[in-house]
Length: 163
Image (cartoon, rainbow, N blue to C red):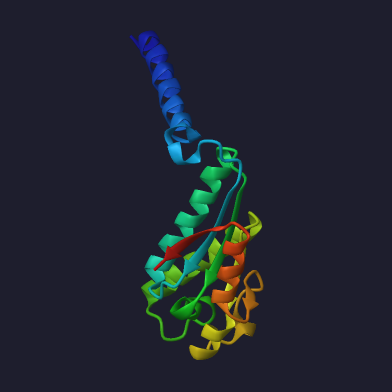
């Protein structure tokens, strides 16, 4: 009985792997037909730590999926508006929010290591009293996040609003 189970288990594993590989192929995306590079700029404005952590993980996962499908992803994430409050101090946040802030920090580090550009709007930082010196050095301050987004779009990046 055990001998019959092993081939069935192996067959199940092979079929499962094929399903995973097929879902990571570009064949299911008509929109990606003929595309060799995927350039996107993400306008991140979320101020809720849980939602922002979820968004950043999703952006990074999308980057990794596109890379696995050989689409040469080139991503930039621009933190604008109230999202800049999530990039420095943990003061005033609940313990649960602090866990999400740790997730955000981890996602930022991982994204930076994968070559994703990360920028913070200094206009927003000033408005929300965020000290740029307290923000991870992986995030570059730019004078005006909207100007940065305009520049990325002029270079052919697709705009992805994240709010």
